Image (cartoon, rainbow, N blue to C red; front, top):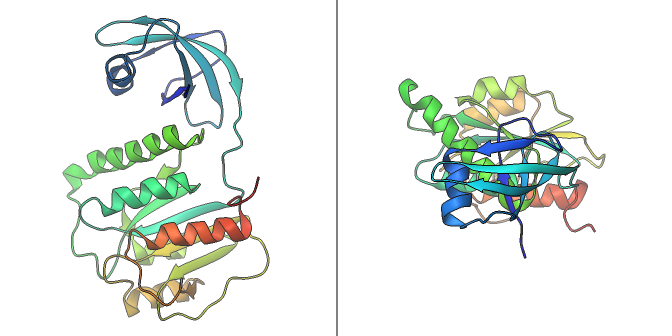
Length: 243
């Protein structure tokens, strides 16, 4: 039987008790109809997960006793930061969810030449919190115990200059660059919005040391391209396809 994994932002330590409230308690107590004694796996994003058992349930909260800690080997061997240009609808949510499943280390939402909207300042914290919950839910599902960081949206031109990783890549169907042979420990990956990176965006990236590469003969959508790229990088240098 699959054991439910739940994120909590509380400190976790063996032999202690925790009280879940809000969405986590509602999901465990109502949606999953948990009972006293049921096994649960808890994590708070520090790389460890803890066996736990339900000790109490009421309308608003669920209490658990925390048991043994472990450190699952579910993190990518390469820390990758994804600079993903913003897109409308649920495309951005879908892309960061799948990127989390593929082991992304951090995600930077970007404004670029072809991003034609701006998130209002009074809605920014709510939007970032929503993205963070998308990432947390993906971690609960895929077995990760480290939660990727979601940064506040920033201009592409600023972000590319701030990256100091071993390898810096941007995707475009007209580029001809190739991946280096040496395995990196860190990667910055830039993916454009609907319509792709403009010539101005590509110039900013190239000036900052990014290598332009393409993923094949077909033009991929903005939500598809990062997933394909991360799978390729994972197969080449990371843990994809390895036992």
